[in-house]
Amino acid sequence: MNDSYIDGLLHIKTTGEQQGFNQSLHYNRYEPTPYVALDELFDHYEIEKSDHVVDFGCGKGRLNFYIHHVFHATVTGIEMNDTFYHQALENKSRYTKKFGNHPDRIHFHKMLAEEYEINPADNRFYFFNPFSAGIFMKVVQNILRSVEKTKREVDIILYYPSLDYTYFLDEQTSFERKLEVPLTNLYEHNPYEKFSVYHLAY
View (cartoon, rainbow, N blue to C red):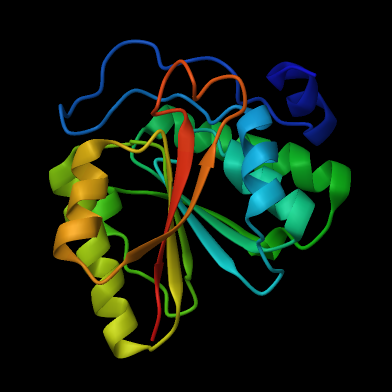
């Protein structure tokens, strides 16, 4: 099943890449995580209904709707691009009209990632190389400050993890790498085709 088919099942539209260029060189173009990759990740990594998942650079919201539909968890998407933000809201309208299950657990915010104030309930953070390492560091520091205020275990999930991201987490934070999920038939040709999950315990 291709991505467009699964979009249709969820009554959303998330396919297609970004047209044009970002205003900031620190932010990368939109590209959603393939559904087949998400299926493989969640064969090895479990999301609970009680989890609060934040997707930085959520684009049109694919990850958010997938997780909400499969796990019924609370999901928050952070997106700086006005067009994608409004497309995510349109997707939410179609999705909730079709399924009607707890739309209050789906949130989207149009803002820069580093300006998002981490909610004390947020405990799972997803990144598909949405921006530069400098911004990633700021976001992780925001997460760490939130954990200092409200003690809890948190995970950072990286898809197609950049060396800058992983080096920072490995060498300059208390996060520990707890899981790697290489993608079947892709990893052997490209070592970046994987998920890396980092855990912070308190």
